[in-house]
Image (cartoon, rainbow, N blue to C red):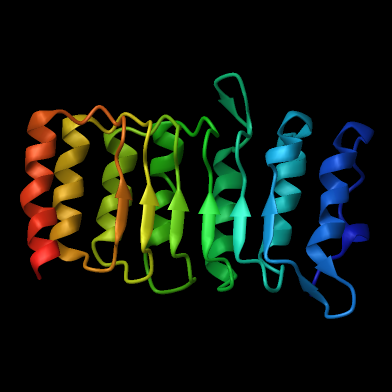
Length: 212
């Protein structure tokens, strides 16, 4: 059941440029969608309802390999609710063609992210290889769920957590993950408030992984 532009709920005229973007996703001849979709150009027009519709459609977008849902916030309030983020996780895991997901600058708070990040990376379903969570409000709680799931994840190759607040407590979870995960090839922890103590905890684990 592949949705088309006409199957979405009635939208406000202010959302027009975002909704029109769906037309660029669909190839009417091959009944497939182009490889990438981004909200970057329409973030000022987006609403939670429109985001929910995008998320619902993602699971059936054949050929969609890159999904960028970035800057989706109003001040410190994210357009992602608990329900919408949960629906996104199900959509990404249900669409094996999605290889890259970018949720940068979405004001995901620690509790909200913790409730779903582990599910996103847990289990064998899905094909996600690149995850970008740059510049959100992620701290130790969400970091623990994320890195616990990554310990047994065999698909993710790149993870960007830069500009979050994992701190030294979060670094302990990084170290534990690196001891059991040999598939992750790139991990960006720039500006995550990890100090010398936390960095020292990660170093032996990453060195052991490199020499394995």
